[in-house]
Amino acid sequence: MNIAVFASGSGSNAQKIFERFEQHSHIKVALLVCNKPEAYVIDRAKNFGIPVLLVDKSSFSDENFLLPALKKHNIEFIVLAGFLWLIPAYLIKAYPNKMVNIHPALLPKYGGKGMHGAHVHNAVYENKEKESGISIHFVNEIYDSGEVIFQATCLVEGLQPEEIANEVLKLEHHHFPEVIEKLLSK
Ligand code: GAR
Image 1 (cartoon, rainbow, N blue to C red):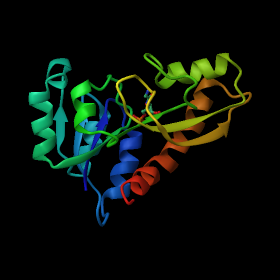
Image 2 (image 1 turned 30 degrees about the vertical axis):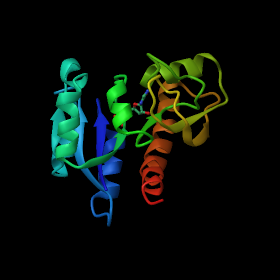
Image 3 (image 1 turned 120 degrees about the vertical axis):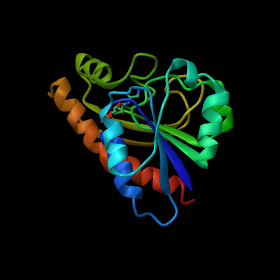
């Protein structure tokens, strides 16, 4: 089963996924799709010999560009790991229930457009939440609203936003590769 990872930033989650499936019996990360030419995740993919496809707004919205590229690499499943653009409808149709995203909060709280990274952790801090966590969900056409597959929580009472971010990232690194593996082994 060939999977594509979509990522826009540092790619620490992508790194964990690359590591998990590097020697896997039936799952292979066959492509990184990235929308930022300077993103560190590109270096990480290259270290694993994973091909990189760079997209811009116009190529990403063009199904005649992206679908053949995914097909060329036999991509059957897509993992969004810190990819911040809304996924176009044609891609969701092409991968029904075959695309998952990780969100750094307990959805449905702190989701939606603009809710990513530090924005999420700042909001959790401002609202004096006692706990936060991660949500892994299927992707549909509305930001962060597809069916939730997995959640894990951590205590964040009294923590600063950066500390909350660290706790949440630890959960992501621990659980995301495992949840993907379980989904793809059913
Ligand atoms: C992760 O915390 C992920 O949950 C978040 O971006 C970060 C990427 O970190 N995604 C979102 O906020 C999506 N709304 P990474 O580049 O180190 O993996």
